[in-house]
Length: 97
Image 1 (tube, rainbow, N blue to C red):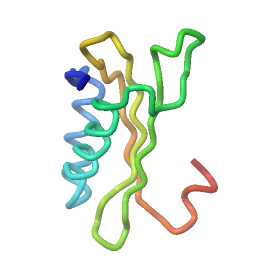
Image 2 (image 1 turned 90 degrees about the horizontal axis):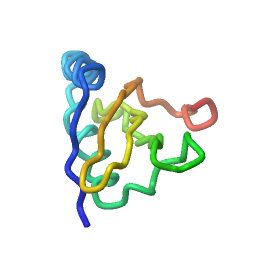
Image 3 (image 1 turned 45 degrees about the vertical axis):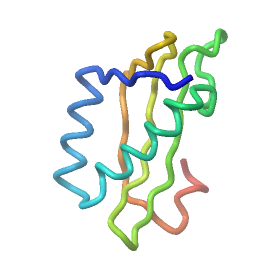
């Protein structure tokens, strides 16, 4: 079942900042939230219960789409997005994130 995404203040600020920096930040955000909304267990668990998770979406430098990691909490039927970090997609990023 698809979860409804609720963005907390820190996440909303990071998204707004990213949209001013990368031309396809909104597209990356929409893709990442689509994945976790339909599959909330996709991210890596950060707590023993597995309710708080982190999901990384790999962007594409060639089209100006940043990568991002989103920290969210599953409280069915909602996903509360606590924070999100955007960064420049690069050739070697998977080795470092």
